[in-house]
Image (cartoon, rainbow, N blue to C red; front, side):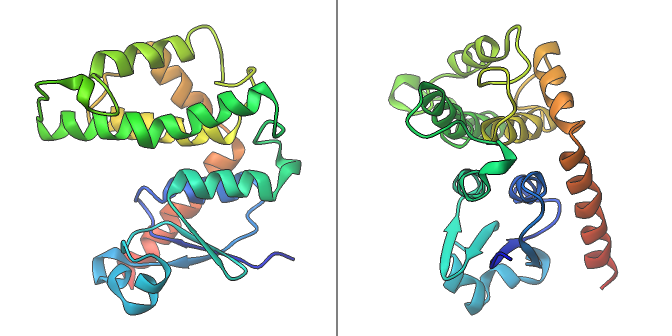
Amino acid sequence: MTDLTLYHCPHTRSATAFWMNEEVGAPARIEVVNLKTGAHKSPAHLARNPMGKVPALLDGETIITETAAICAHLADRFPSAGLAPAPGTPARGAYYRWLFFAPSVIEPMMLDRLSGAERQNPGSAGHGSPDSVLSTLRGALADRDYLIDDSFTAADLVLGSTLRFAMMFGAIEKEPAFEAYVNRLAARPAAEAASKKDAELAERLASA
């Protein structure tokens, strides 16, 4: 038995960690944090995450926040799921690169575009220019199904979730390679199960 609790709100960014929990066999108990009622600002949740955000993962007495960190932790916590290359290998280095490319590069670029922000000196931003982000993504996904050695990993889960979100809101155009990649990930049994469970949780919240 594991002592894991995932603090989650349906139909939010924490859906990525929710999906990751399904990929490793759904070991975490799900604790819903209702953002609409302000539960994320309660003293109990702020003690878990002073940022007042979801997701958060409680593993024993340790709290892990930030989606990519949670996914990396679960991949290592449940190695039999095969969602991370072995530590110390070159593939592990590439895995880290793409695992953190989404929150460090895609998401800030996406927020710039959605807010209409124009940087006079894109090179001063850690995430660079939209053109460089998009060309890097095209190169990463050209002629391959997944990012690392053509095998699905937690890096695909995190990057694919962010890319799907960006295309959904028009921050990144729906190019054929991007859509094919996102659709491939969405067809995974764990992704489909997570989506169904997330919708059920949302319905319960709406009727509560």
